Length: 337
Ligand SMILES: NC(=O)c1ccc[n+]([C@@H]2O[C@H](COP(=O)([O-])OP(=O)(O)OC[C@H]3O[C@@H](n4cnc5c(N)ncnc54)[C@H](OP(=O)(O)O)[C@@H]3O)[C@@H](O)[C@H]2O)c1
Image 1 (cartoon, rainbow, N blue to C red):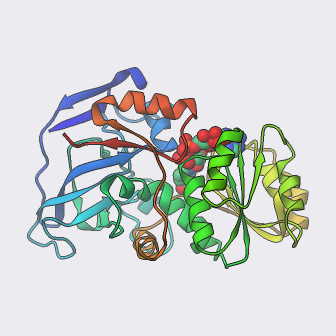
Image 2: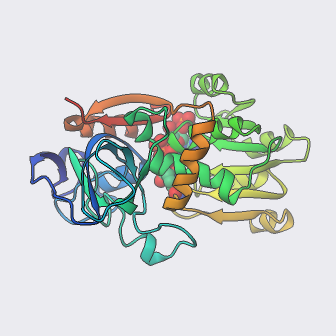
């Protein structure tokens, strides 16, 4: 089968399409003919060399496809089922732990899914939403689940609450769509007026250009009758956390997800304490949460926003497109003929 390997030194020019053996499933495994994957910022950090991985690692944490073989002990899936991977194949449910999460991340600390076939324990996969194509499903295991967990698991979002989303990348567009489907008011920010119009077309109630309005947190708070937003889906990181705290109402919630502007921050701790804000760092979610998301998406009238699709062999071009930040929503890799 064909697969992409990250050759040394890691970088977008060193992603090589290679022939490699098709895996065969053990008793508890399923073999999946991969149909699609989608790009996440985390994958970009890996393929660009910012997150070191062993030489020859197969990248990509997202995958969807059709089951083509199952081991003797497999009970959850049968040949022909439509499935997608999980970001943390060993975090099945309950509380996260280092062992369950970071020891085995496809495309990072474990072999990833940029290959025509993928194989693993049945517990490393879930069903996909009934109406979704493989490409749409491939956008869910990382970006979709992160937005879902931020809003519904940790945020316990209620209809009528206000959610602030930052920029127009994968996580933020999902958060906007899911929050609107749940009856929330959404304030969206972007660096681009054109993208803000597209966010408005997806349902954003208020739009703020964060370049033109550096004090966007204050501007967002001024739009809210309760003095600030109930939830921030924080993907910017170091350079945005201060404004996110500014945007929150007293007792609000910041789901701290992203590191787009860096790994450390000067935190206005005074605002955090005075407003009694719940600041919660989260990383994706468990398989149990992914199953809940699939049930939820089966009842929500939303479809993932796919910006563009690239063949597996053109993976470097796909990442260059992501690097340019011209995308809106998700960039997909299609593995079809
Ligand atoms: N913790 C987790 O579980 C988890 C899961 C998924 C992703 N993440 C993290 O979340 C972040 C977003 O991931 P993604 O996959 O959605 O990325 P992405 O699709 O590459 O999104 C990039 C977009 O973010 C926006 N952006 C960049 N700088 C910004 C800033 N200073 N303020 C507001 N928006 C800004 C830009 O939107 P505009 O062009 O509209 O300005 C840009 O197009 C990354 O740091 C990623 O590592 C974390």
